[in-house]
Length: 352
Picture 1 (cartoon, one colour):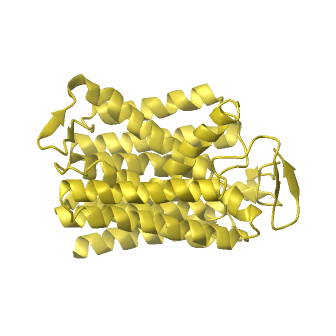
Picture 2 (tube, rainbow, N blue to C red; picture 1 turned 180 degrees about the vertical axis):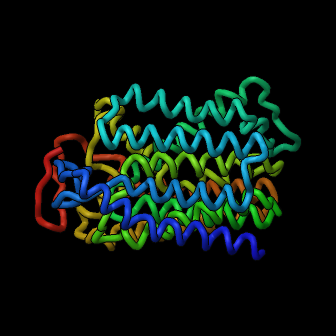
């Protein structure tokens, strides 16, 4: 227990203390995010805060776990690679293709070091061994989660807070399953995000940038593969999906919305959940807090279903997903068309 607490405190302290230093360097070097058409902020903000998150997590993992196993070597090397991809994108800008190639390369590092989803549990009993399919499945999972965390990073404190909630959810499940290494990884990740959050919550002093959002998505995906997805329970796959439910479903609804509207999937819009909540008149803080509550509810659902029998857990998770879909329809996350005008709390109109 003492080791877990110290790993958390070490990660928390490094993230909290290093973030102002990163902010100072970013300001001195002119590395700032300027407001754009889709930006929620109205003045330039320094970014690269993800460097502090990365350093905090890596230092805590090296101290608490070490790099003596292939799995840890793969996690640390892959995490470093995805952080560099995000850093280059923040500093110079990368094309979507190069950015995706970097994400696939980082995910492939995990596979090469043996961190992969080798089987899925069958609700009818037994295991479904993936064989060579484990490689594309793992790559798809890691790249998908990396991207959904990147896409949810739209408001002050949103990505960091949701990552904290997801990490805490995975932590509780790891404690229940007595997975010591996964517990250390999740406490290190939780400390890194919570240490950064005071500097990033509205009004943010610094953004994490793609350096942070890509790394957080990658780390959460890798930790879930290392932990919950190795559990031989019927709802093993459902747990990380619910833990990361808000960014996953928000991205899924964005894809559906754009297909229904005849838009390219890659085309950015202002139809994400946080845009809709702002359109209802909520402030940035209120919107983020509402999304924290939704994420916490999904995380709690993930924890609860681990105590159910297979079919009961699947029915419970199905009910949770149904509520998410109904909520998405209620607040227009699945629509409307591109001609709609949204009104925001600052009375600014943005034409879609």
